[in-house]
Length: 199
Length: 220
Image (cartoon, helix red, strand yellow):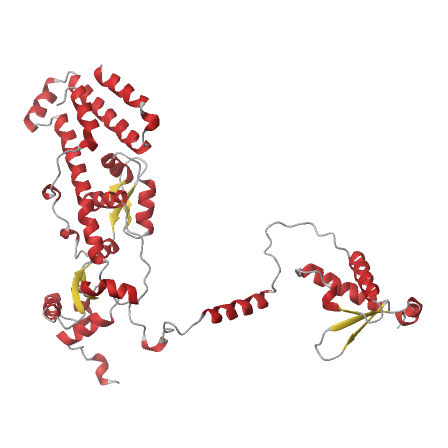
């Protein structure tokens, strides 16, 4: 019997770094720790070390980022433009205002139904939802226990990754989001409020 | 009521309005009316009391909703900034497993000519010219008709004969090729046409045979 087979892999910081290199997705500390048979905290400490080590290495074009529930090796933002040109990577379409607005509503209120989103936005969101599903920003997150059992939507890990978030906690608490003065856009709202004697 | 006048005036302008804005306003007006009517309705004493306790004012609900909506709108610029920042980062794809390792084709090692060659080869294999079947026409091609057509062509070519290739109308259609071959075989069996080939797999030359010999050879 091959002796090394049963032997446990020794968990070390260089090994974790090497694993980050070959891994094409965010490395979740808990998962890697489970494969190595060690405490998640051990792996997490190595990963945090690596984040700091890379941050202190200006001669490197790489960094380690906390993203989508894990850690991942990435290029530094300073080289983004040049890399895009070298790779001749096509400029992927960015999300429209309507899409971002809908995404914000889903991110804060998930799981949420289409009707609930529309109640907030005041307009139909069919096509926006389709775009968001196609681009894997949101996915079905079960059905609501209500008449018609409407689909509930939630954000995906891809959503976190696309916006460079480590977790949903990165979003500021909704109460803390600064609101500009109601502008001319909502003048109709004001007039309407006055006319029914609410203001 | 005042709101109704305002609402009608607003609707009069609808033709020039963006439908989205119009829709938004309709929802808004409906919500306002709902709140207004709720406020006007007399309430059972107990419900009114509990409402006073919790401070559950329908106006507050509306204000909260408007405020929340403003916040979601404000978040658009936050998300948009994050989107831009994240776009400046690049990540690796998962590394290929060593057993299935294959070097990627390096940039610039392929030229447009390669693409053209590949296309030509593919078209040749596909049997170029055969149109994709979208509508199906009833083919009025009988063996008798094909024989007549072929015979006319062969006779028209005179003593030198004619290449079989030239007997086929372009673009090539499978059914016509098959029918022409069947016609040729039948004409040869009846000894009205002779076929010769100068080399193995070479082009086939067709010549008309004098009608007189027909009977003799046909018996063979």
